[in-house]
Length: 351
Image (cartoon, rainbow, N blue to C red; front, side, top):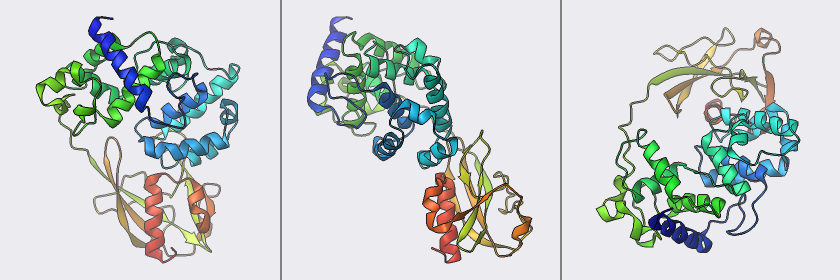
């Protein structure tokens, strides 16, 4: 490391010793590393999700499945239901696959990046984070917060995603050999609390003296982001079939969007422009309004249809289950269908 990199690492670790966030999956600065299971679980949950949202889920998961062996032995449906609301449901499927792989190899995580990368669902970032935080290995850990901090420190103006190689190289330059886990978490904390995407608090930043972006007077211009593409718009239709205080729910296929989750029956989100699509029963159907939902790659308008008939025998045998309305929150519906259910309850007067 050159002198500038050494100063950056020392200044940041000194700041972290005083200002580290207290989070349920962390050990305090300088303390022995936390359980790798807790580090891994938190990192998977935090992908594409805020710290505030993850805290409650993390507490519930670790209470219900306190060890990697407990999680590995859990039923798929229980884990998917417990994950409901966190989004990006492929993470939950990978979570189970990884837990079972670790359990099958003795219940111990590999202690280095190379071994961690061999586990299901662990990409470069997660493997580096677990290696550094749980095992103290020197690893270059670059999430969105770290990306922003490094881009500003070095005024890297190559637009993303092309600029990520230069950002990673710069992050490697300033990553110390000692206290690798604390350094990684310090970078995350700095990006989350000081070097924020808008209105960075440069006067409070321990690295401002070394920050090229700060010296430009416009640090918030970094990293340079590409122009956002307009998301495609899709139409879909979901079906509310209720009787005797229960609603008909189905289990989605294990792969694909919201795979393995309980849900309302739908048309595969292939409705015509007028919002109509084939339902699980011939009808009669009443309009129940519509909800809007945004996924990573498209926006969806989901039109809700309320069944007003009584031909229950026509429902496909074994294709679903009657779920009590007063326990609907326990069904683990993903956010899209939870929103649709709330609308259906309001429209049908059953809320």
